[in-house]
Image (tube, rainbow, N blue to C red):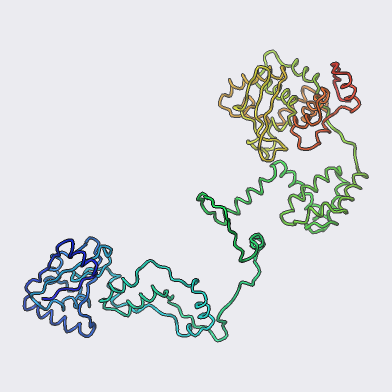
Length: 566
């Protein structure tokens, strides 16, 4: 009696010690089947010298010992279309009528194991391995490349073959595979690495190696990266342990898009519009006079003297700032050129030659505010209350008109700057609201506005009641009857109708509030903080002559309030 060799000796030992072994008895064989067995034995002698072999089949649902039904099917009803080397060799092993067969299939081989004595219905991939040619190996001239071989031997850590397959165990399982040349090529690839199916024969003049590390970085971005890293091979390590949250990596396109958005938001929309106008002026100047648009100290000086003959030299100074902002990304030295001695002296000389007296609008006074209150109709509309509330709040809080209205140009409007209704706080003698942004607040940090004037509080409450009744779902504090944030032109039109004086304009509110604080004896730094000025530019808003302010302060607040600036 002869038994089949087991696939796994470890499993065989465990089966003997823990569970009974199923025995498959070979049924009787007819005369025709005996002839078939003798024919199979003769045909396999020339293709295999192994004592036994396992038949390949993806055993997706079989575990442990093969069921007897499968064995009987293999012996008595073998399909003719499965006449393969494995099947013939399996039949050759069944020569004795009294043979007892015990087969084990490891659990980890489900669906891909070579099962002994099983109906031949395995996958195409398994069948192809019987006839596939061995996997390719490197050409002989590759081993004669002394430079490449020396690199591999000196740097074994760079040429490791990481894999999780236990090659020795796989080799033992494939010991009975009929195509051993193919098996050995696969095992060699798993141990040493697979060679791509390519011909690497080169001409005699082709170099064996090519070192491209000396080449300079192709772009400025890569040069900056290498410089910031301390060199091409510098490594930055941290000695402080930290837990970094898992974040999604960005694509290069997203980096470029986000950078463009950030650069575009570096200046305010209105400032960008003004700077764009200055750049257009520069381009037109270069086109007319046949100059290159690339700035130099001489062409910037030419621009100063040319434009100063057409507009105020102070405006030319602002134009230069806009040109520098727009061209700095392309020509980084433009600001240094702007500050050069040649350009600075040219601008200073033009201011001396073409200088004009400064014309500033008159500030509003308490008399103007009383006139506005007295002119209010006995049955005011919502827009009438809105205008008066803006006028009083702008005067006492030193508001810029743009902080309470929206620009006339739709392209310059930014809803983030609009004051919200929910930020209002009412007190017994004052009212407050949050100003989200202003000209000097580039980071949208905001400011808390507090107004303690009783007249302003009275008419602000009247406006707020009307607004909440008509526009309960409008999010903005300042809103017209139609729900729109009041445009600047709407307020200026009403202001001109109330005060026909051409020297009264939008900045008169801010100038009037600053002058009023100075008349009351407020210190300069208090005025600067109240008006949210980032520099001492607030001094130009004090429209009282210093001697007049000095006389008022010495009088000790006698109540003298001239109705117009001195």
